[in-house]
Image (cartoon, rainbow, N blue to C red; front, side, top):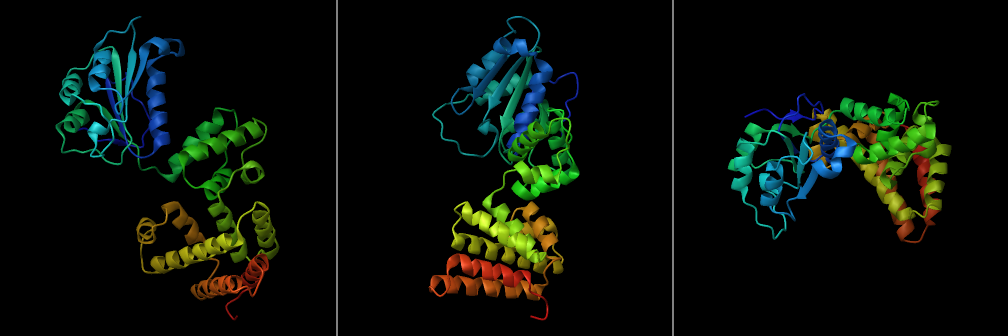
Length: 344
């Protein structure tokens, strides 16, 4: 059985007759599918020589018959099998019946002029199935689930290059902090930044701050970062911006408390010798969020985090019992936490 290429987007030439793409990184699946198709076909050939079949809606017979048919105008043709759930243990609601044996026969004797791409957007293949064993034996297989930080940067650098823009490490780190390692969202943001900058201005942290999108959770993370760095004025300004954006103060308080708790737990497990990935499993937090929280553990000691959690609970009590206005309670909490030191 040929080993799967893990998150390696290089396409060897000449093209293979069969490709199997599986994994949970949809951006990589789509990119790899595009790369293979671009290598096989020119733009003007696609109307006649590119076919896409969703196996949740179309029987295998139809797709295999197309793959076996000689291209109408000669050259290569590309046949894509989307949602190839027959290769996984996933249960998909579909009334379509598939003759898997027909595909198996094709995989063992593929057409010379066809490039068949099977796309299985699942974490694992069901290697108990004979069709999977045959597919992995005959196809060039790419596992597109795990991806390194370096590869994420290179991918986004390539996205920026398509717009003749330059992408910096500083800008990349700021974008990751803003929206996390979701490749599709990152690519959209990099594209937006690249259009804004053009070839004249590099995509740096300032550009990301000027036009980048951020989730509420990311804004709260940055708010906590400012509190921990004792940048009281910036933290209060950010709080007011969030309130102007109609964010509910009690929800903001809950997210503040959650972030302090994550930092506390991450610090605890780090001291116990756990790796970043193991901490992610223990806490149920995304590995990249763990990485960011580890940076925050350097700003507040364990004792200060405990006091922060106590003060969040007290602010919650003050608000819910009507003793303090919601916004005022948050302002007082942020001011107190920003000025806290070990001796308080």
